[in-house]
Figure 1 (cartoon, rainbow, N blue to C red):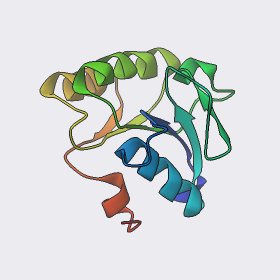
Figure 2 (cartoon, one colour; figure 1 turned 180 degrees about the vertical axis):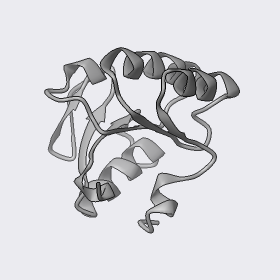
Figure 3 (cartoon, rainbow, N blue to C red; figure 1 turned 45 degrees about the vertical axis):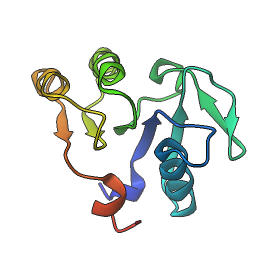
Length: 123
């Protein structure tokens, strides 16, 4: 499946324009990706509904991108495991040895130590 065909959930979307959670969401939308934003506060960013958790999505994402503190990423991995998400991309700063291990043990394809935006020639 082409990366642009994947349903992508970005966990850690931010209202603050200087935060990576905002920039990644904005630039993926502008690049034509199918993205949903996740933030516990919910609301709306860039005219799009922001979901409070992955469980609120109508459909499980093909890929989850974390832009969250490591401790939060641990909870996200657990949520992905419960939902049967097959792939997770942990942005730099959002992963630890524990989060990587947990995701691999759950059978997910895990990418870390690499920026999704750089790897896909968006930045």
